[in-house]
Amino acid sequence: MKKINLLLSLILFAITATSFAQADMKETIAMIKTNLLQSKEKVKQYAWIETTKTYIKGELKSTKQNQCYYSVDGQLTKVATGGTDQAKAPRGLKGKIVANKKEEMADYIAKAMEKIKAYMPPDGEKIQQIYGAGKVTIQVLEPGKKFKLSFPDYLQQGDMLSLSLDKANQKLMAGNITTYIDKPEDKVIFDVTYKDLPDGTQYIVTTSLVAAAQNLKIVIENSGYKKGSAN
Image 1 (cartoon, helix red, strand yellow):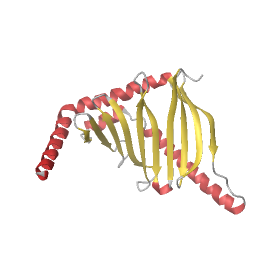
Image 2 (image 1 turned 180 degrees about the vertical axis):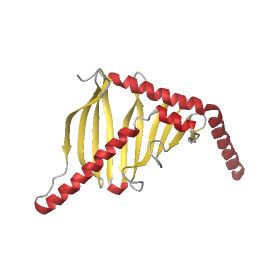
Image 3 (image 1 turned 30 degrees about the vertical axis):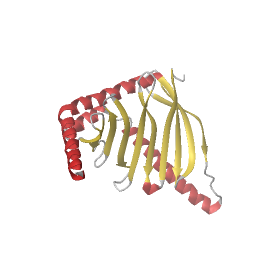
Image 4 (image 1 turned 180 degrees about the horizontal axis):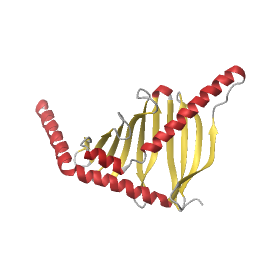
């Protein structure tokens, strides 16, 4: 009996996924594009605080805060409002070695931050192109309601952008990116979560990037959204 129930569940899952792919994929891609475009424009009405925490080998090394807003010409502006550096370099030869390693890590962190900017928020036209090429895959999270769409080779060969969405409420829930910094073996993974502002504007509330080979983790939190620029 259990085997029959399991078989029926698998058949139902396959039917749901196939039905979604055939009937709803085009509509869902359009919904994602519309959501991304509208949120990108609406968030320009706000100012907010961006807090970036950097961990190395699990230890918090620095915390930085920026006041963020869009200028009248539509450019995102960030003004440093504070931060802390937990690291204290030793003196002498050991201090020089530590300083060199710190410089190398700072360079890597800068590249990682640029990588986040390249992927987030996702570009609707790139998503459309991957869909048009027939490369999008679907995972059903909750039949008829919640799905995860994956877009391979989104920005570079071998990467993967995935978006989890609440189709019933026309909202993005989360994103996941697997990519690399300099070499394919230098893999990094970052996850993002979305929230809604009172007017329905969706924004990325947290971004967490992990580069296991570097023992590095970067967490970016956005908070304190208020309408009006910081000027």
